[in-house]
Amino acid sequence: MKAEDVKKIAVIGAGDMGHGITAAFLMGGFAVAMRDIEQEYVDRGVAGIKRSFDRFKSRGKLSEEACADALARLSTTVDLAEAVKEADFVIEAIPEKLELKQSVFADLDKHAPEKAILATNTSNISVTDIASATKRADRVIGYHFFNPAVLMKLVEVIRGDQSSDESIQLGYDLAKKIGKVPVVVQKDSPGFIYNRVNEPTLLLLSKILETGSPTPEEFDAAFKPIMPMAPFELMDYVGIDIAVHGLNYFADVVSEEYKPSPALEAYLESGNLGKKTGKGFYDWSEGRPQIDLSKATTEYDPNHLVALQLNEATKLLEEGVAEDAAQIDLAMASGGGAPIGPFALGEGIGYSVLLEKLEEIHKKFPLDIFKATKTFKDKAAGS
Ligand SMILES: NC(=O)c1ccc[n+]([C@@H]2O[C@H](COP(=O)([O-])OP(=O)(O)OC[C@H]3O[C@@H](n4cnc5c(N)ncnc54)[C@H](O)[C@@H]3O)[C@@H](O)[C@H]2O)c1
Image (cartoon, rainbow, N blue to C red):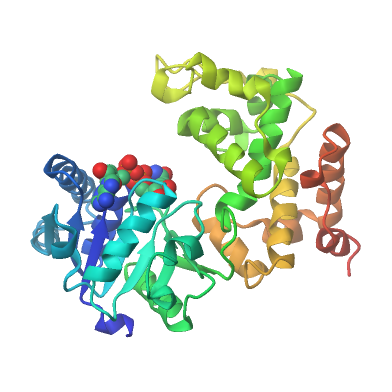
């Protein structure tokens, strides 16, 4: 099947990601059937789609007619078989639990047309493990959108151990058709590209917190002038629970060194999870925190974080997770944060400058994760 043959999309799950993915495909001109387990959740998803469309309309990015046309192509149901019976491409966006995803994939395999491709929006679970619940592992792929899916450009198209080239190509082409930036992840590897490259930064923040110095505000003040959201502020914004969960996941599947520090865990235990609870590293009760730039630490600067990203990115090359440096840069630049990726930054700043920054971090926290890779060292040596 080719992208031009795809007429009907089914989205399983109408939560944060499911409704955003549905909205993105509706805006891309597709007919979408969206399914959740209760009518109430379906209705909430539809309300979310309408809210997004209203925002686009108010900014002049969607006309009244285009909006009506998109909504006319949406159908909703609580019945899985009904949702997928004519689908060409199915995207699952249900909670991040392996057994649940496997049981839904077994049902999808039973009810979706033989030729249909089944895609999972999992953040972390192995695509291969999910695909094993079906008899069509060649037609199962990972399809990782970013939140909010209707706006964020990056879609990681992940190759499970048995995904066929044709399935990957179809996922890639469809993402392009709806105006996204697809990047193929060549290996079913923890955190895929974007989250993996960012994880060492979270680990560094977790370790700094444990030492007590610099404080989150002193640290953030050194970054705030060039970042819309400084690192600790961002962790507060996303949720400290999400950060701890991510670190624990990486500790389980990548390296024990990722284990969150007791100082970070303490936030979880106290229930101060950041913006959503009104308090985390900062007080959010009156809106976004005011960071006092005069408190900026001189111990860390943005190049330290670029160095961490670049080092992790070189591991993805060494492990064959990404095809080349350009694909990693594309993923990092489209997933949010910096306008260009770590390799382009490396070229601009100088690999040897960044290697020194990485070595400073490694000296403070002698973890293997912070150790420079051979690729990084070779680049710094100019070879
Ligand atoms: N939220 C994010 O930032 C983000 C980003 C990328 C990927 N993801 C991944 O996307 C997936 C969904 O996350 P979310 O944030 O949208 O979760 P969510 O909790 O907002 O939504 C999940 C929805 O799935 C529904 N559901 C549960 N079982 C179902 C079933 N059998 N059939 C149909 N619907 C069912 C739930 O009722 C709920 O509405 C997860 O795998 C998550 O890891 C999340």
